[in-house]
Amino acid sequence: MKTEDYEELPKSKSQVKREMQALRDLGKELVDLPAGELSKFAFSDSLYDAILLAQHSKREALRRQLQHIGKLLREEDESSIRQRLAQISQPKREEVQIFHEIEQWRDRLLDGDDAAINQFVSKYSDADRQHLRQLLRNARKEQQQEKPPKSSRLLFQYIRDLIS
Image 1 (cartoon, helix red, strand yellow):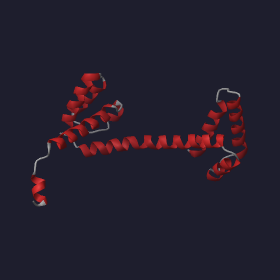
Image 2 (cartoon, rainbow, N blue to C red; image 1 turned 60 degrees about the vertical axis):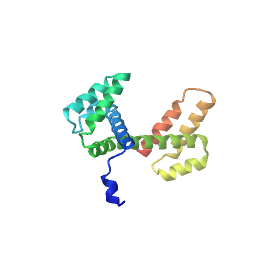
Image 3 (cartoon, helix red, strand yellow; image 1 turned 120 degrees about the horizontal axis):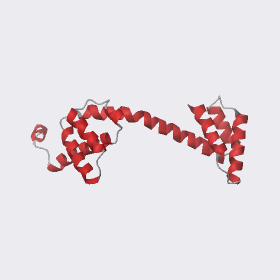
Image 4 (tube, rainbow, N blue to C red; image 1 turned 180 degrees about the horizontal axis):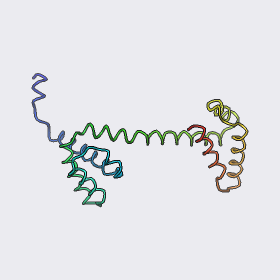
């Protein structure tokens, strides 16, 4: 058989099920979006209404509504919807990545010694070494005395301001 013959064969039942599951998953992502973000999509009115209804549904009604949304998504341009979803989620991923970097620096500075401080100051030249040491000293003291982590929060804010 030639490759052209394979292209003419109908899709298998499993392939159709996988495609429908992908559309239901896409529908679930759309249902999880806030209404303000949904307005940025170019949906049909019926799909938009179905998504809004699903946002207020629970359990079995939600499952049935997601099935319906999956069917409605067959009529829509799936690639443009996925592209728009990626644009929406990209800034959130970047924020999370920066947040993790700040946490890692805070933990490394609290657990480390002068080498960690030197690394931080060399990477972020605007950092005030003396202020950083003071925050670290206070945060360690609070940890030892089992007090609320006020200085640790201040250290986090200081690192966040330098990184941002």
